[in-house]
Amino acid sequence: MSDPRTLLLGRGPLLLVALLLCALPFYLDAFWLRIGLFSMAAAIGAVGLGLLSGTAGQLSLGHAFFLAVGAYGYVWLAGEPGPGLPPAVAAVLAVLLAGAAGGLFSPVAGRVKGIYLGVATLALVFLGHHVLLTADSVTGGFNGRSVPPLELGGFTFAESDPELTLLGVPFGAEERLWYLGLALFAVTWFTARGLLRGRPGRALAAVRDSETAAAVMGVHVARYRSAAFVVSSMYAGLAGVLLALSFRRVVPDYFSLALSVDYLAMIVIGGLGSVAGATAGAVFVTALPLLMTRYADQLPLVAAPGSGGGSIGPTEASRYLYGAAIVVILLYAPDGLHGLARRGRARLRRRPPGTGPSSGPARTGPDAPSGTTGTTGTDDTSGTDDTSARAKEHTP
Image (cartoon, rainbow, N blue to C red; front, side, top):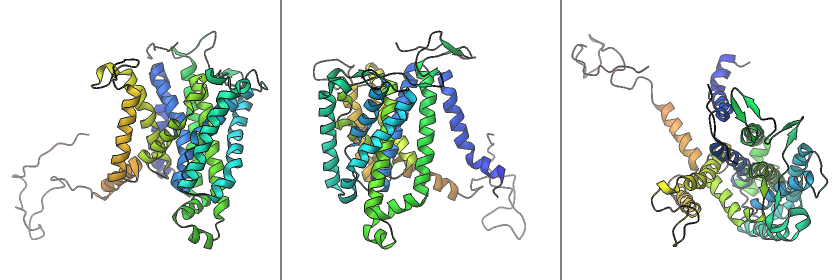
């Protein structure tokens, strides 16, 4: 039985991060909370793509299609026109609908691999975008549809009247959705890590490394490939639901090929096959254009949105930056940000304690190591050891 103190020390950093994330809505303005919401939604989708491409070794360019299935599935199931189901039920069914769409495509994923699967999934993006534009009764066409707010047990994740206030801080839609996003991301984090550390993760890694060896060990290659595609589609559907709730309106142009490329950039920058790496890459790729848009007037060579004259806008500049980041990662750190962090932790652990110049008192006599003076008075390494909420700005 594990020692409770050891368990607490091992989980301590994770608990501190969780407490910090829970406290942020009391101090951050709506702009920063929106960045966090978009990053959490992107992280959920990136974790799913990481399981498919990083762990199973299956290239997919159709991730945007499954995000669209989740987002529009929720909007149609919970809204009018549509069945008008309870929003919580609609959210669950939207995730299952995305998984069903992945299941319909899974026979192809089970038999095709590499660039051929990438081209096949690319067709899903163009087909899905055409359907979103033409199926006006379901998707609203080019203008899209507004997103019904989510309700759980009578609690609405949207602005309310009268306004909800906690500890003197008004809790609007961003603050409420923040905790929903944290809960959904926590579920994604622990389920994905459980899959990677269990038998399915080992089987998918074996399929990625050598299909012949995996088959000899008894792994059903086509079945595990198909299952990875379905699970990845369900994660994408969940990300689509959270994105729809955060944007409050869904439009077809958002779910384009560029979004699929963004998700590939997330898992490459963060590190293939890593849940933490996919999360870090998602935060980087999602937050960078939003931050550059806000501070465009303070950045060199970047023009404010809508400026003419052939200037570089924040979105284009951010794409150049994380495109350059991909090149640097592939050249110098193929395992991404997660690999860099892992190697940094390993170096710190390998450093023996007390290796500094003042590691302890000098020894005298015959036991003193060679090269020491045997005195302490002339030692020149005498270093010392350093041992109410505010009002917030809301977006309209």
